[in-house]
Length: 135
Ligand code: HEM
Image 1 (cartoon, protein in one colour):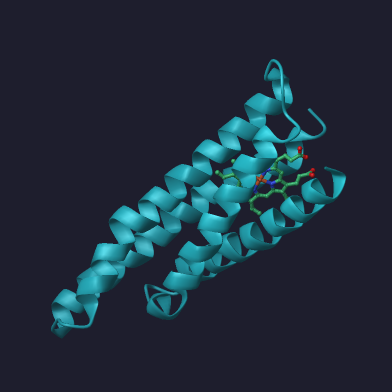
Image 2 (spheres, helix red, strand yellow; image 1 turned 30 degrees about the horizontal axis):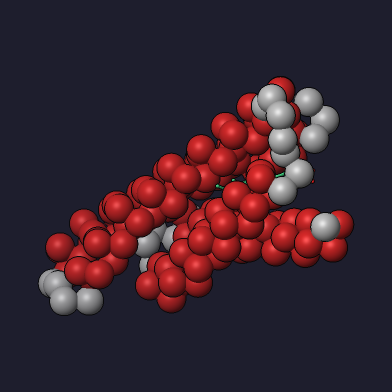
């Protein structure tokens, strides 16, 4: 049980750091390079969410308490962030390659905006994850 917890937590933190790191970087790159990072970014998000869910159910039983509420707020923001990246960013990214320059710039703005919104949400996630233990 202890080993499972440690392995899950390490996978959670590694994938979370990659997801958050690429999101922060892409939020500052005006939609450039997002096509290179989008798949690994979404892969990392999936691993972070899945391992986060496991961490939630493995050791946490009984009433939520302050720590649980803070973790839940962080998890909610993470889910909203992946939703924004998937629903707003992915379709725009998919159309990019087939279009002319003016339309391309509009879509790049949309991709960049989705990364910026996700970055703000993930900032709350990381704050909650870091603070929950001491609440
Ligand atoms: C839906 C998404 C997420 C869920 C459900 C979730 C859930 C959790 C849970 C339940 C814990 C507590 C583990 C314990 O019992 O000690 C935890 C810890 C942690 N999470 Fe998340 N998490 C999510 C996303 C993220 C993301 C995106 C990051 C970004 C880096 C992150 C970073 C961390 C860190 C660093 C810890 C360790 C905190 C500590 O041990 O003090 N999590 N997470």
